[in-house]
Amino acid sequence: MPDRMPDAIPALAVYACTPAQSRGRRHPEAAPDGRSEYQRDRDRIVHSAAFRRLEYKTQVFVNHEGDLFRTRLTHSLEVAQIARTIARSLALNEDLVEAIALAHDLGHTPFGHAGQDALNACMRDFGGFEHNAQSLRVVDELEDKYAEFRGLNLSYETREGILKHCSERRAREFGDIGERFLKRQQPGLEAQLANVADEIAYNNHDVDDGLRARLLTIEAMREVPLFARHHDAVVARYPDLTPKQLRHETIRRMINAQVGDLTENSRRQLRAAAPQTVDEVRSQPQPLIGFSAAMQHDNLELKRFLRERLYQHHQVYRMTYKAKGVVRELFDALFADPRLMPPELFLQTQSAEADQGEAGRARVVADYVAGMTDRYAIDEHERLFDARRLR
Ligand code: MG
Image (cartoon, rainbow, N blue to C red; front, side, top):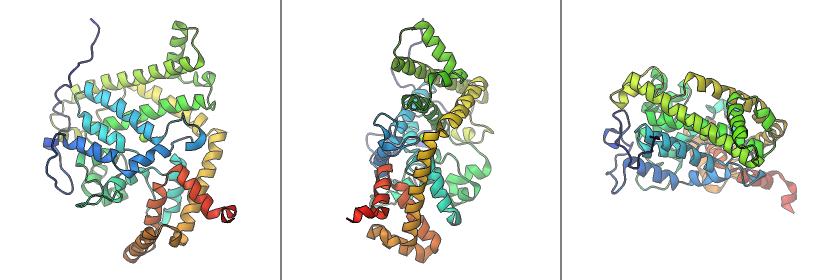
């Protein structure tokens, strides 16, 4: 008999996070009506301004290059979809994994990693800039619309999942949420899962976008064993597909293979370690959610290929160069003269500077630049630096 997906949501495993055992919110709140605590987290994330901006932020391709490329919004939805599927089959908390997936990229600068690297360089003397720590800062501090607290006041487990990695120095600033980086502990399983789902999503959609942008070719992609295996199987079974169908059939099989491997291998590791509580998950020496050794190897080959052939592709490199310049020039101008920012932000730089000196001013500028979408950063750069805009 073929395997059938269960129709009902199964009961949660003992090692899943549950609201009843949550470490709670920083500002205690009454339990929500008609939805779980993690659903409430998810809803607050979806209603945040930072979430709406994800639509106009990119990872590899600049937003205006084409309407079909992934944005951080569609990426986050893909991560949520992959993570929820796996969560359900491992009896983990689907609401929590969804909240983490939707929030994981909220702290990203415009222009993906190019923007983050440029902003980190600008902030070198003032504590640096890490997009992951910034995602937590967005939900803890920067979203500003609730009467009773700053940020979104999310549950500990959602915040734990958002802070995927951070330096030891930053970890100390984050208090309880940073402790695991100092104690070398693991986060809950939902956080581990959202992290791997992120990788599955971006590696595969970067292949898709790279092929559609013609920065990659099928022939070159066949150097990657995972791609070659699935591509050749599709061609053997369906010799007459259009290039679009072939691309899609290959990539969907790659995603399926990775999801299947991750699910089965994690199930094996969970069975072997048999944690009875979330805290037992946290004190494991290694994450329990992960690929088999063989898939780990295939995945590394895929990543290495993308790094060399796509992320360092001549056209991407030129775009990255320009994007870094936009971020750097915006930061430098606004830091040198904060009056160039909207008046309420100028006032913020003044009070931050009174509290923390230049580093306080730099942080307000960095938060502002990091919050910009690709197109807003490009427009603002033009408004500030293009003399023709004076005419
Ligand atoms: Mg991501």
